[in-house]
Length: 193
Image 1: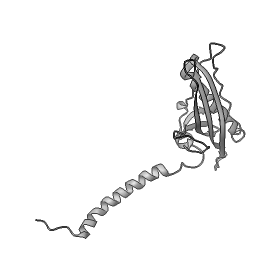
Image 2: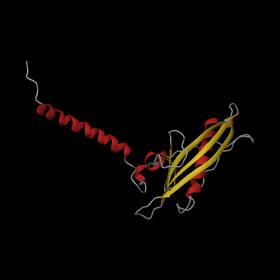
Image 3: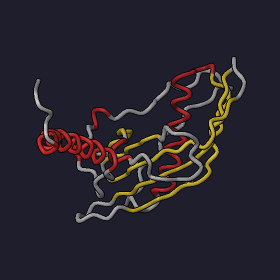
Image 4: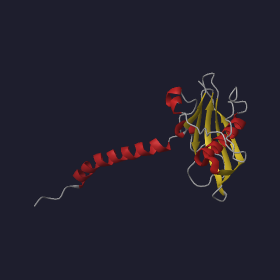
Protein backbone atom coordinates (compact mmCIF):
# COMPACT_ATOMS: atom_id res chain seq x y z
CA UNK A 1 0.00 0.00 0.00
CA UNK A 2 1.16 3.49 -0.84
CA UNK A 3 1.86 5.88 2.00
CA UNK A 4 -0.51 8.90 2.16
CA UNK A 5 0.70 12.08 0.49
CA UNK A 6 1.99 14.80 2.69
CA UNK A 7 0.12 18.03 3.07
CA UNK A 8 2.92 19.85 1.26
CA UNK A 9 2.68 17.58 -1.79
CA UNK A 10 -1.11 17.94 -1.87
CA UNK A 11 -0.85 21.73 -1.77
CA UNK A 12 1.84 21.70 -4.45
CA UNK A 13 -0.44 19.61 -6.66
CA UNK A 14 -3.51 21.80 -6.03
CA UNK A 15 -1.90 25.22 -6.60
CA UNK A 16 -1.60 25.01 -10.42
CA UNK A 17 -5.27 24.02 -10.69
CA UNK A 18 -6.38 26.86 -8.38
CA UNK A 19 -4.32 29.40 -10.32
CA UNK A 20 -5.76 28.18 -13.63
CA UNK A 21 -9.32 28.37 -12.31
CA UNK A 22 -8.76 31.83 -10.84
CA UNK A 23 -7.51 33.05 -14.21
CA UNK A 24 -10.62 31.68 -15.93
CA UNK A 25 -12.95 33.34 -13.45
CA UNK A 26 -11.10 36.65 -13.66
CA UNK A 27 -11.21 36.62 -17.47
CA UNK A 28 -14.95 35.77 -17.40
CA UNK A 29 -15.77 38.53 -14.92
CA UNK A 30 -13.77 41.22 -16.65
CA UNK A 31 -15.17 40.41 -20.07
CA UNK A 32 -18.72 41.04 -18.82
CA UNK A 33 -18.22 43.61 -16.09
CA UNK A 34 -15.88 46.10 -17.75
CA UNK A 35 -17.66 49.16 -19.12
CA UNK A 36 -17.48 50.02 -22.79
CA UNK A 37 -14.52 51.98 -24.03
CA UNK A 38 -15.51 55.58 -23.51
CA UNK A 39 -15.61 57.92 -26.44
CA UNK A 40 -16.33 57.96 -30.12
CA UNK A 41 -17.12 54.68 -31.89
CA UNK A 42 -14.57 54.19 -34.69
CA UNK A 43 -15.99 53.34 -38.13
CA UNK A 44 -14.33 49.91 -38.13
CA UNK A 45 -16.63 48.80 -35.27
CA UNK A 46 -19.77 48.87 -37.43
CA UNK A 47 -20.69 48.19 -41.04
CA UNK A 48 -23.08 50.58 -42.77
CA UNK A 49 -24.06 47.72 -45.08
CA UNK A 50 -25.65 46.14 -41.98
CA UNK A 51 -27.65 49.29 -41.26
CA UNK A 52 -31.23 48.15 -40.91
CA UNK A 53 -34.44 49.90 -40.04
CA UNK A 54 -38.03 49.15 -41.00
CA UNK A 55 -39.29 50.87 -44.12
CA UNK A 56 -42.88 49.71 -44.77
CA UNK A 57 -44.81 50.31 -47.96
CA UNK A 58 -47.17 53.25 -48.11
CA UNK A 59 -50.77 52.71 -47.09
CA UNK A 60 -53.48 51.72 -49.52
CA UNK A 61 -56.58 52.82 -47.58
CA UNK A 62 -57.39 56.20 -46.07
CA UNK A 63 -58.05 54.72 -42.61
CA UNK A 64 -54.77 52.75 -42.42
CA UNK A 65 -51.99 53.71 -40.00
CA UNK A 66 -49.42 55.55 -42.12
CA UNK A 67 -45.64 54.98 -42.05
CA UNK A 68 -43.58 57.68 -40.35
CA UNK A 69 -40.66 59.43 -42.04
CA UNK A 70 -37.31 59.23 -40.26
CA UNK A 71 -35.99 62.61 -39.09
CA UNK A 72 -32.91 64.28 -40.52
CA UNK A 73 -29.89 64.12 -38.22
CA UNK A 74 -29.04 67.24 -36.24
CA UNK A 75 -26.07 69.28 -37.32
CA UNK A 76 -24.06 69.69 -35.23
CA UNK A 77 -24.94 66.50 -33.39
CA UNK A 78 -25.17 68.14 -29.96
CA UNK A 79 -27.88 70.54 -31.20
CA UNK A 80 -31.20 68.77 -31.03
CA UNK A 81 -29.96 65.21 -30.50
CA UNK A 82 -32.55 64.67 -27.76
CA UNK A 83 -35.44 65.51 -30.10
CA UNK A 84 -33.84 63.62 -33.00
CA UNK A 85 -33.57 60.39 -30.98
CA UNK A 86 -37.15 60.69 -29.73
CA UNK A 87 -38.52 61.23 -33.27
CA UNK A 88 -36.31 58.46 -34.65
CA UNK A 89 -37.52 55.93 -32.06
CA UNK A 90 -41.17 56.88 -32.63
CA UNK A 91 -40.74 56.39 -36.40
CA UNK A 92 -38.73 53.19 -35.90
CA UNK A 93 -41.38 51.55 -33.70
CA UNK A 94 -44.29 52.75 -35.86
CA UNK A 95 -42.64 51.45 -39.02
CA UNK A 96 -41.75 48.14 -37.33
CA UNK A 97 -45.40 47.72 -36.35
CA UNK A 98 -46.57 48.51 -39.89
CA UNK A 99 -43.97 46.25 -41.47
CA UNK A 100 -45.19 43.40 -39.26
CA UNK A 101 -48.97 43.91 -39.56
CA UNK A 102 -49.43 45.92 -42.76
CA UNK A 103 -53.04 46.84 -43.48
CA UNK A 104 -54.15 45.00 -40.31
CA UNK A 105 -52.53 47.74 -38.16
CA UNK A 106 -55.27 49.70 -36.44
CA UNK A 107 -53.85 51.75 -33.55
CA UNK A 108 -50.39 53.09 -32.69
CA UNK A 109 -49.82 55.33 -29.67
CA UNK A 110 -46.31 56.24 -28.50
CA UNK A 111 -46.18 57.92 -25.06
CA UNK A 112 -42.81 59.38 -24.15
CA UNK A 113 -41.90 59.33 -20.43
CA UNK A 114 -38.29 60.36 -19.79
CA UNK A 115 -34.92 60.81 -21.46
CA UNK A 116 -31.28 61.27 -20.59
CA UNK A 117 -28.67 62.74 -22.93
CA UNK A 118 -24.91 62.81 -22.38
CA UNK A 119 -22.33 64.34 -24.67
CA UNK A 120 -19.25 62.23 -25.31
CA UNK A 121 -15.89 63.86 -24.86
CA UNK A 122 -13.38 63.22 -27.60
CA UNK A 123 -9.84 64.15 -28.52
CA UNK A 124 -11.00 64.74 -32.10
CA UNK A 125 -13.25 67.39 -33.61
CA UNK A 126 -16.05 64.82 -33.87
CA UNK A 127 -19.17 65.19 -31.73
CA UNK A 128 -21.24 62.31 -30.37
CA UNK A 129 -24.00 61.77 -27.82
CA UNK A 130 -25.49 58.94 -25.84
CA UNK A 131 -29.25 59.03 -25.38
CA UNK A 132 -31.66 56.92 -23.37
CA UNK A 133 -35.42 57.17 -23.61
CA UNK A 134 -38.24 55.43 -21.76
CA UNK A 135 -41.75 55.20 -23.20
CA UNK A 136 -45.01 53.25 -23.31
CA UNK A 137 -46.41 51.89 -26.56
CA UNK A 138 -50.03 50.90 -27.23
CA UNK A 139 -50.91 49.04 -30.43
CA UNK A 140 -53.78 47.06 -31.84
CA UNK A 141 -54.72 45.39 -35.10
CA UNK A 142 -58.10 45.03 -36.74
CA UNK A 143 -58.25 41.51 -35.26
CA UNK A 144 -56.93 42.15 -31.72
CA UNK A 145 -57.64 44.44 -28.80
CA UNK A 146 -55.17 47.11 -27.78
CA UNK A 147 -52.15 46.01 -25.78
CA UNK A 148 -49.67 48.25 -24.00
CA UNK A 149 -45.94 47.70 -23.69
CA UNK A 150 -44.90 49.63 -20.59
CA UNK A 151 -41.60 51.19 -19.57
CA UNK A 152 -39.61 50.34 -22.66
CA UNK A 153 -36.04 51.67 -22.67
CA UNK A 154 -33.81 52.11 -25.69
CA UNK A 155 -30.36 53.62 -25.87
CA UNK A 156 -28.77 55.42 -28.79
CA UNK A 157 -25.30 56.48 -29.85
CA UNK A 158 -25.34 59.28 -32.44
CA UNK A 159 -22.38 60.87 -34.21
CA UNK A 160 -21.99 62.52 -37.60
CA UNK A 161 -21.58 59.13 -39.32
CA UNK A 162 -23.85 56.62 -37.62
CA UNK A 163 -26.80 55.98 -35.31
CA UNK A 164 -26.53 52.86 -33.13
CA UNK A 165 -29.63 51.58 -31.30
CA UNK A 166 -29.88 49.07 -28.43
CA UNK A 167 -32.95 47.92 -26.54
CA UNK A 168 -33.03 46.98 -22.87
CA UNK A 169 -34.33 43.42 -22.56
CA UNK A 170 -34.65 43.20 -18.77
CA UNK A 171 -37.80 43.88 -16.79
CA UNK A 172 -39.57 47.20 -16.66
CA UNK A 173 -37.28 50.18 -17.22
CA UNK A 174 -38.76 52.91 -15.04
CA UNK A 175 -35.93 55.41 -15.68
CA UNK A 176 -33.43 56.23 -18.41
CA UNK A 177 -30.02 54.58 -18.18
CA UNK A 178 -27.25 53.71 -20.64
CA UNK A 179 -27.83 50.00 -20.14
CA UNK A 180 -27.21 48.48 -22.60
CA UNK A 181 -24.44 50.74 -23.89
CA UNK A 182 -25.23 51.20 -27.60
CA UNK A 183 -21.52 51.53 -28.38
CA UNK A 184 -21.14 47.83 -27.54
CA UNK A 185 -24.62 46.34 -27.90
CA UNK A 186 -26.15 48.64 -30.51
CA UNK A 187 -26.99 47.90 -34.14
CA UNK A 188 -26.54 50.49 -36.88
CA UNK A 189 -29.95 51.89 -37.88
CA UNK A 190 -28.78 54.90 -39.90
CA UNK A 191 -25.52 55.90 -41.62
CA UNK A 192 -24.62 59.33 -43.00
CA UNK A 193 -21.32 58.68 -44.79
